[in-house]
Length: 382
Image 1 (cartoon, rainbow, N blue to C red):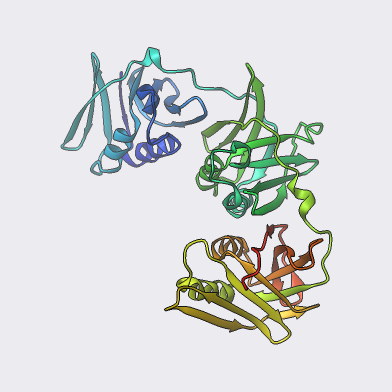
Image 2: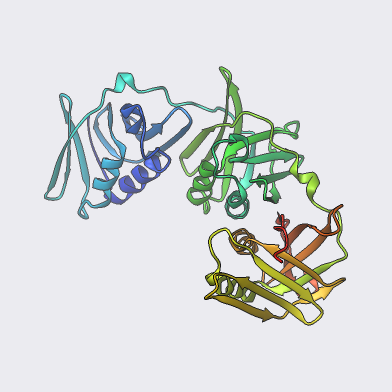
């Protein structure tokens, strides 16, 4: 095999391909990147039996062929090559890489032992890339990081008519966002569900965030349910998480009469300041009154903190306790100048119900997006 390729184009393609590879794998062969030189150009692929990435780029192909090479090593080399065309050639089981005056000799891996890259044919629907990337960033933060319960480490994608909703939970909070969904030539595909690993979906959002439209395909093959995301000659496939996602959408209140509207930026800064004195896993006490919002942190005997900011309260005064990290995740996901806290009640009069966070365009105007973040308060500090 022999080809030459633009350094920047090649480096970006390798970086994309290795991004989803695991840092450590029990099978060394899965740490490789498959490079195929064909009449149409260069195809780079990676696959670890759960996630695959594939991209095609232009290259001058002198001799067709296929090689498998260590992915992370190749990415490190490609990112540091001088500004000159990159030339690849093979000699027996070695790969020669030349760029300007830089020369590398890499050991090739056995191509015949590499698994077949999954192919997902057809298109189920289209989503606008920027909206999809924003929705992923807003929702995925609420997914669990505890692999003990795999079903809540994912983001549930639900297609209904012309809408796609993303849902995530870790039992302490729930995040939901809805965006437009174009069924295209598949008008009967409403009601589709897919539980996608949150980490994979976050990489998809970062990779395709400015790609125009993203083609999304669902498929079931050989008892393996897959989802594929494609745009700009790049494709990412992921094995879906098996299991039933909890019906958390029903936890959201239809309406609330008790709520407060606060400047988002001011609240984020105040929460970060006051929580400096907290010990790990401790909560902040929030007191909402007609005069505004007061935050109190009782840390060690040597450190306490409090701060008050403006808040427009509608309804009764309320006191609740919230973990600052969870609260900041929700506030950071709100993409509006103001935020609305809606307070619900539980059957236990001494315990407040979940607090709903939504965007607010102004003090009296709800936000334009459908983002909702439900956070369970801690038991009140005494």
